[in-house]
Image 1 (cartoon, one colour):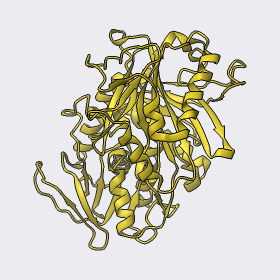
Image 2 (cartoon, rainbow, N blue to C red):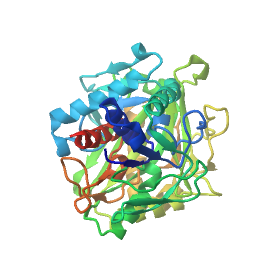
Image 3 (cartoon, helix red, strand yellow):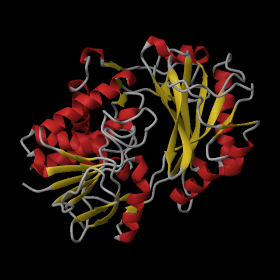
Image 4 (cartoon, rainbow, N blue to C red):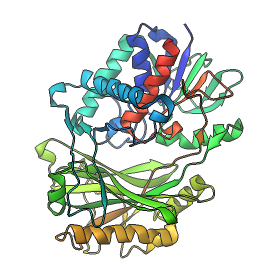
Length: 433
């Protein structure tokens, strides 16, 4: 059997390893290296690294449609993509302490009160439950360890030599290990996109540029959105301005016990959200991202990095509320890390005239949801860094010039738990063949 090294213990890498050992691949031939910690040591605030990655520390919702989170079907076709989704969802149920509580919502029709101002994307979503993600992680990790999979924690991969088939790391607190591989699965997640970009440049990989995706995390009392939540719990509003190369969408909606979380990427703070199911955490708040996709920007990755830096004050992001709401508490009881500002001017400074689209999006929500008024706040920024996507062999997601190196997850522009896991599973199936 080939020796397999997986860089990143996120959803993509973990699903790949699971598919392999489930089908008789020897676990002692699989090594997973990650900057973070096992699910037993990983802390709530460590949202970017560790077992199951950012996806495994999120809101516990698995989208179930191929048009969301990256275009998996372009690699393998619609039917195969849905089959891969099913395998990922089955794994989350399999390691869930209460699998009977995993439910699928499938709203069918767009309400008339939305139509004049927004489109509403309706698609099935599996609800795993934020409160169960830690336990799922522990159960899943224990299974892979029992199969002999070798995990190297708190170790950052700093260099990969595709020619000699070696990985190089910083200090190895978990001990030394053989750094040679026969096959490499590169699934670094959001925190390693910069590394993926570096590899693309170092090896002159053919890539496809991706647009800027940046915006804010919006927060308001849930009561203002209840009319829509009753129809679509995980609603996604969107607007398109095709002549301007701009589109906006709400995403990752959290309700009832909804909390904003600060993320640290490349030394800068951005914001995301999650939700708890336990009534003890209920705060009757809703939060969701308002993410803007901008086409046609030269060097979009670098542009987004610079915009994020402009929204940092004293080492954290910013918060604005027209009604002078105060930033919320996290689910751990601490204040969300941010600096309060008195206008949206920092957003315009960072995004230029593009910030007007976000302001208009919020204004029109006030029309559709008339009780909203000024009873809201925004955390700036929320960002999805999309480095140029390397061109890969559609049959196994391997690099064209290095067929034993497979890119998966955020490194291949996946934007979600289900798509990332499906990509990892797809690569594992190709190895098993």
